[in-house]
Amino acid sequence: MASRQEQLKRAAIFIVADGSQPNFYQLASRLQYEAGASLAEANRTILELLGRHALQTTMSGGIVLAGQGGGGGSAVKSVLESAAAILGIIAAILAIWQGAVFGGALPGPGPLQIIFPTPLPIPTGTGGGGGGVIDGPKLGSPHATISGDCTSGYTIKWSAVSGAEKYQVRVDDHFRQTVPGTRLKIPADEVMSDQEYTVIATALQRPQSDPSNTVIATKC
Image 1 (cartoon, rainbow, N blue to C red):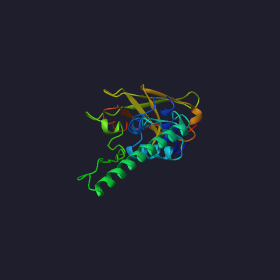
Image 2 (tube, rainbow, N blue to C red):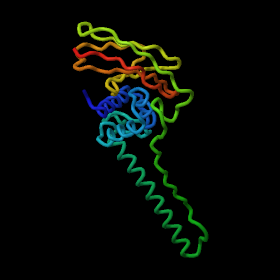
Image 3 (cartoon, rainbow, N blue to C red):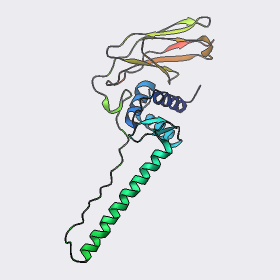
Image 4 (tube, one colour):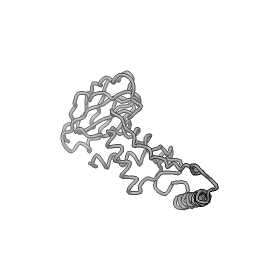
């Protein structure tokens, strides 16, 4: 089974691959909502993928798969050249102003106030459903049951929770997948040892529920 971090990386790449070009905050929120990541896990996953150039940002701040940045190196080169040209103009104006001040022609402050933008902060928030957009009461916990055997495989079912939009299924306390309905089929060949399953109700703008009761798929 893939490690927790590898699962989150795959989930992030899958989300970005749909072409919606989420920004950092939106991708972090979707990792929390769809993959059950904590905020710290979501931020760390995105930063690592960006650092390894598996993902990249577009000129508008969206995140895309590497090589799909809408211009790639040529776009970056164009921006750098434009920035250099602007800085050159500013330097020339400041040189003219400085000469005029020293010559006594211009008193007072300089002609330009240069303001360097501060970087956007990494989104902060709490909870597992949607970062800073969480609002409303905590979701109730579903009740889970399991049926089946090593011949037919196992089926996990759970009660619908009012206000829930999706459900996170966890196996041995690790995220397995997000399900929009109230059941999940587990093939027998995946049950290589006794596995404990729980279900968590989620909604984008509600705090996620506590885990359901535990159900066990017996080793096949």
